[in-house]
Length: 316
Image (tube, rainbow, N blue to C red; front, side, top):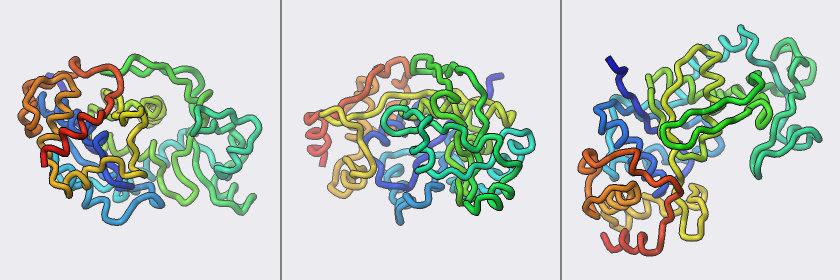
């Protein structure tokens, strides 16, 4: 018998959800519900400085406004420190981690740290093999200590159910990445891997900007003896100028649309149309289940045109 399908919605309470999030969450919901699977909800609240007050409740209102549901209770990621630290202990015991006292400024200033794109700097391995333990690193330097994962060398091919197969050499492109921050908080990559396993997630559908994360998470899953979910990375929603929608600017937030009386069925209808489904311009998520097919999804980014916006505003 085939294993049960378990998908997830995993928003972060760091800002208001926008139309790009609506599309990703609807696609994830359709992909799982169309095959009779379970869908779990996880609030990824570990990015402390960026978590904004009231965003958990705002996110739940947005999901419910769209007509999405999930199975079981919402998991608050920060409630799982015990299992995350247990995973860190397992990695440490197997020699997979090492203590690091480098700050972000240290990494950026390292002459041997080539930059990947415009945002990410490769960790040059400054502290690899330098200390026997985190306690020794603290005593020797008087600095706060993070833990880094020893990334295996070589390219890894990530097979995706939608995006073209991609190859990532994490050691060469990113280096040994952080799995526990200097304040003791588990880092994103580790938390996601641990919680996906804890919740039994078998399918991860998300934006293709996170495709490089799949390689890092694969390495962690392998080191922890965990299974690999099916990854489905879909193109992002861009504005008319080709700019990616961003939380920090509250671009076309679902909260603003809701407050101005926009019909959520028009949002669902727009996403369905952009996903290759020929349905009514206004509908509830469950009304598109029979028409859903990943094969219908366009391969490129979705452009949010002025005409699209006019249709949404006219639904008030």
